[in-house]
Image (cartoon, rainbow, N blue to C red):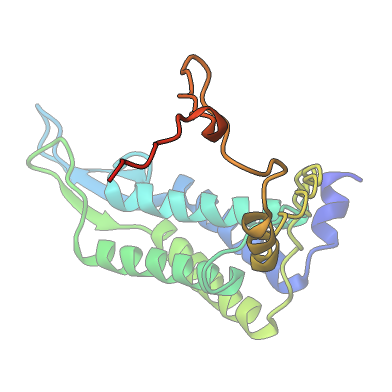
Length: 219
């Protein structure tokens, strides 16, 4: 699918936001200011037009950044790029348009500085085109927010590989108290007197038949 076909499939309010951003970026090439000065060796004023790039400063750079950001957003939605902006696309476009409009209004009263100290700077028609484009961008953002179309779904993240199941542990053998009692209560197999330890001789008992008889004393 070509880029033109993808742009045609965009919602009309988002497409209008892209047109307004493109117009805002193109307006930077138009004459924004008029410079009046007296050349050296002459007594007459000379006027020359200056575009936004001729006196490029923070204001002009911010306006260009706003237009580029909205154009990137429209291009990303046309290519089904999935990402989420805080508040949605409509809020982001409205903030961008409002910020550009505020900077342009401020530039109407605060003229840029020029290199010639004796020159004066006036306003030309190109900056009004930029004001209209910024206002259209703000309105397009409000329209996108009002329609509230769903954003492209995020791609399904790759599921992690399942871990191999753990081998079940053998059941722990429980020793019953009765079994311990039976073991302790069993009598040993041998009977009689306890055997002597090895290496130790047992004293022999005298045989009672061999004991001498004691004779009774004579009276």
